[in-house]
Amino acid sequence: QVQLVESGGGLVQPGGSLRLSCTTSGSIFRINAMGWYRQVPGKERELVAVKPSGGSTNYADSVKGRFTCARDNVKNTLDLQMNSLKPEDTAVYYCNAKVVEGGTGRLLEVWGQGTLVTVSS
Image (cartoon, rainbow, N blue to C red; front, top):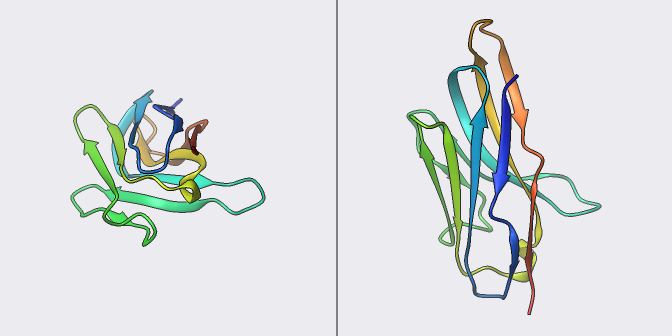
């Protein structure tokens, strides 16, 4: 079973920085894309950044220039460096991966459990 685990969330003041990490486990043949999404209670989950294999990262307009996504294709991890954080960045952040499962070849979409980021003074 493929699993994703996020870490690095917490409370930060406006203008501050946080780094989120997403690690994978389980039988993975290939990851086609990994990304970060976020959700505020009562609203739909929205894309933050997605990085396909061999392609450039696609960022939401609201985070361009402030957030940077870094993927390690060997370790199958994905980090999100968040700078110049704003109160409106407060949300639960979820890691997502589109995976080809090892052994079965099944295409899976996997979500982590989420990590809370709170931006407040």
